[in-house]
Amino acid sequence: MQVPATFAYERAGSVPHALELLDRYGPDARVVAGGHSLIPMMKLRLAQPEALIDINGLSELAQLSVEDGELVIGSMVRHAELLAGAVATGPYPIFEDAERVIADPIVRNRGTVGGSLCQGDPSEDLAAVFAALRATAVIQGPAGVRKVPVREFHEGPYETAVGDGELLLALRVPILDGAGSAYEKVERRVGDWPVAAAGAVLQLDGGVIARAGIGLTAVGAEHFCAPEAEAHLIGKPPGAEVFAEAGRIAAEHCEPHSDQRGPADYKRHLAAELTRRALARAVERI
Amino acid sequence: MRITVTVNGQPYERDVEPRLLLTHFLRDELDLTGTHWGCDTSNCGVCTVQLDGVPVKSCTVLAVMADGHEVTTVEGLEKDGELDAVQKGFVECHGLQCGFCTPGMLLTARWLLDNKPDPDEGEIREAISGQLCRCTGYENIVRSIRWAAEAEAKS
Image (cartoon, rainbow over the protein chains, first blue to last red):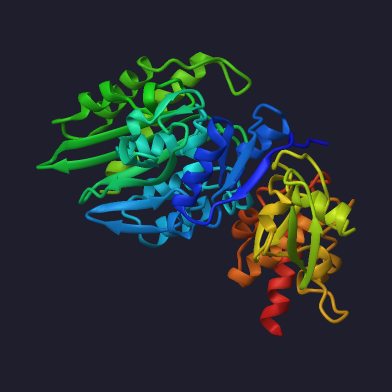
């Protein structure tokens, strides 16, 4: 039987209350949202926070909206809600592609967007999605609200820009007119973490690629993105050869590790191939 | 910590440690052992219950998180002495063998049909994709859920 170590439990009634609680309990407090990453780690005693600050009641963080040309995804939006919202209204099918293969429907009912990002797992799907989309993380702390580009959000495995006493409020995604997007993942079985996965966002102007975003996960890509491959695409007409070359460049700049999900060379191969496929599918959707 | 959780329509007030998991709260505090306890890692789905009408894996939810909320377990599916259509479906189509995954399967099936009364096979398989049947009896589980959908469409 797996049981977490003892901890104090506090339920936040508002964002200021959550910040006050974080301040009161100090660096050994952790925020809990869906709990589907943190609670298993606590059961294995890999995490032993002295206090949990429960933000499940903060409905103000559970909104999915469009503001000033940006899609605003609250940190408490659950995976199932993002999937439903993405299907119904989203300008970005990349969310639907990714959410359909994140964990399973029951876990998606509980796990949250903010929790996934703050966990900072090196194989997190949404980290690659938001990196491809060049999203911005909105973080509140005692000193006020600050914005951090998602490409600077992850500071290392399980380390993020959200500091002690701070709370991730939302992700803001610029809505690009006429952009196409897609996410491609290889997993060993339903609900598993990716062996490798790639997301792509493309916008054309006058028949050539004007903007390109490539996100990669589980392959040791720095900040979950592939800037060298993106640079290769800019100004070129979309096509099989240019996409294959972008995939090759993306794979060259990854640092995958061999583990139970596969050897490093296979993951590097997947990084190239999935980048190519994601780009091809993204351009079809423009 | 003092909590009140409404389970199958009845409020229960208990003093619990914050680290108590919802699965164990249901099984050990309320003696509702229809909710099973399996892998303990939110993979197998045998601990699935409905929290405010939505299926969740109760081994990864703290009991204190259910304070003030409504939980439905397999014991709450039967109404006025009559089995729910999904339970009848599992009986009619031999939807269980050892029965270990069955309570969780039933609660997900109920949620699926509440939201999508006429699911096709693919939609049923996707809905139960986070739940493992160790007897590998998926064919009959899918048939059972289809049976319930058709029975409810007729009634």
